[in-house]
Image 1 (cartoon, one colour):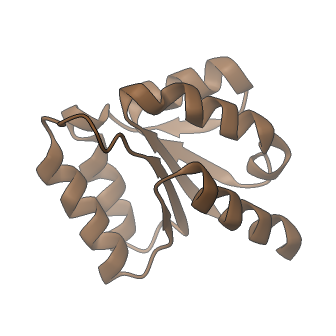
Image 2 (cartoon, helix red, strand yellow):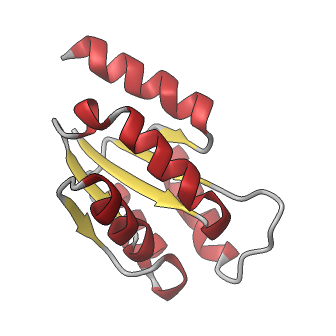
Amino acid sequence: MNIALIAHNKKKDDIVEFVKKHKDVFAKHKLYATGTTGQILIDQTGLSITRKKSGPLGGDQEIGSMVANGKLDLIIFFRDPLTAQAHEPDISALLRLCDLYEVPLATNKESAALFIEHIDKSL
């Protein structure tokens, strides 16, 4: 599977913890991430991750393009619902594309865990 990993600044520790916990599952898939999240995950987990631009610099749109072109199977996006984001229109567009193209999207640890558990049992 092709999986994208994204996290807002206040959720970066959460996504690192999540990916470390499920590293054996993630290691079996092709991973993509927005710039800063990707670099942190590479540094903290050693996983191979293709990095896009940072979210505010177009990374969310790059991930959205992958959705629109059928190149992603799952997105895990740990969003910070309590902090305004300067690139909120890009985030909304990405969420809309996931709905339009029926790409599963997890926006918190519990929904992400359900997807990862399903993927792990399917292998």
